[in-house]
Length: 70
Image (cartoon, rainbow, N blue to C red; front, top):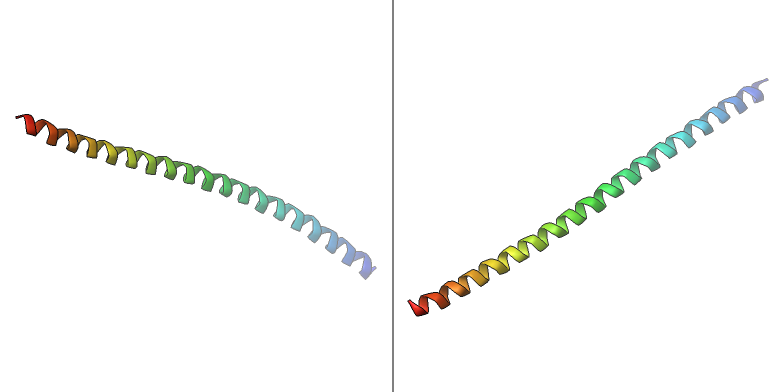
């Protein structure tokens, strides 16, 4: 009788743990994909900043060259 009750409790706990693990795994997957997305965005931003800096340098260079002819 007691063993039967213990088995029922064990089974319920197992089912609960399996469900909990599945929920946690799903959450981990969601967060992993967000991290990947943020990393991509960050990389794009860095590339954009680098291009903007290069454009500024080029503009300065052209300004200097133009001022030589003025």
